[in-house]
Amino acid sequence: MLEVKLGVWGKDRIADEKGLCHAGDYYCVRCYSKDKKVKAEGFWPCIDPDIRSFPYCKGCITMLQYELMMNLGKE
Ligand SMILES: [Zn+2]
Image 1: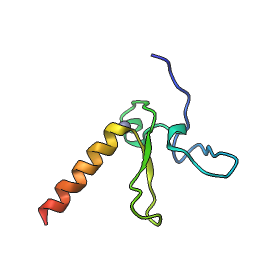
Image 2: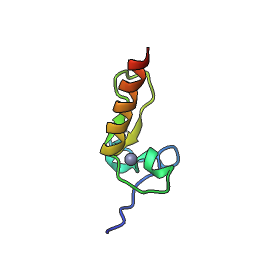
Image 3: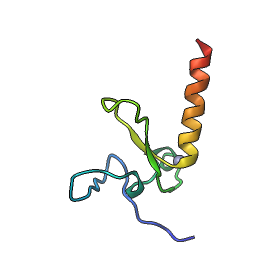
Image 4: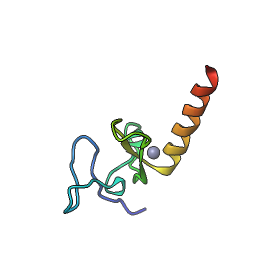
């Protein structure tokens, strides 16, 4: 497998000419904490622009959405 060189969220700052960050330029923060280097696919959560979101891979976003739904179901 080809090792992709991506930024580490919170450490590296990769932005385009407009100063915008793209999730695809970073590793998934959740996988990275488990020593797995997976390219992120999107930011999560992105419901509210005031809430800080982090780059995650597709699998982690699905997991987080599932966990959120489980937590909401508990109330
Ligand atoms: Zn991940």
